[in-house]
Image 1 (cartoon, helix red, strand yellow):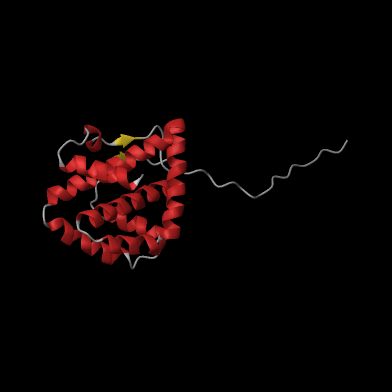
Image 2 (spheres, helix red, strand yellow):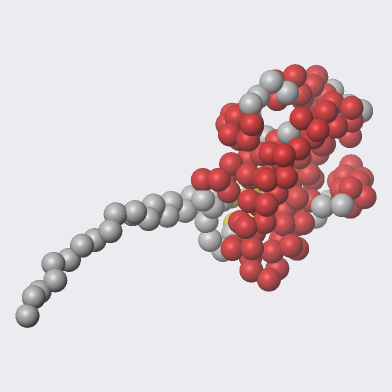
Length: 174
């Protein structure tokens, strides 16, 4: 999602002209594997921190988060790409962009509804997140926080591991 698009959506939300889509959960055509559900959680957390940084004027803390977890966040975006491609096909990019915009809008609205407490509460999240170790802890942390999420990802049955054992059959001798 381009940053200028985010700002335009945030401004529309603050002016009360947000779309009804922002409050409607998206449901994919399929399901999300465990790593994809983790990726959605990390995206939720990253978006919340971005909204906080813009609302509370803490871009330095957000930039530190991005630098600290750059590798994990890059890998996370790749996993999200796989999820959206599988579930939305040719419209995956638009679906992803809509999801990211709706996520920021819902989180911005949640922040506006929290009033002046929002910045204080989310400032603590920056402190907590910077001591986490990698993408799994980020996902677990995000899952534990009551943050808005405009998508409902149903869990897929995990693929079975391929067996490395070879099956031997007796050859019949003529």
